[in-house]
Amino acid sequence: MTTGDPEESSSRANYAAEVVLTGMARVWPPGRNDPCWCGSMAKYKRCCAALRSVS
Image (tube, rainbow, N blue to C red):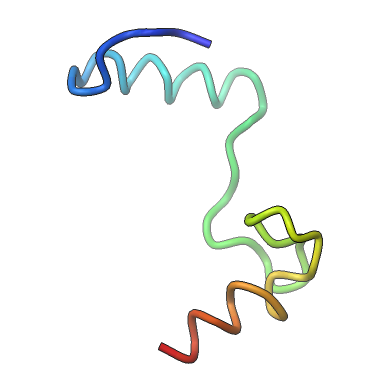
């Protein structure tokens, strides 16, 4: 991973490009039947999506 000052826009742009190139980027929001992004391995619709619809 790249390093740099997170306050600098060039550092953030470089990090974003690296995330995409290494395949670490995630689509947002995840599909309802995809694993939840929080790492619980539950389906998104039964995990964080359910919490999001309550608030």
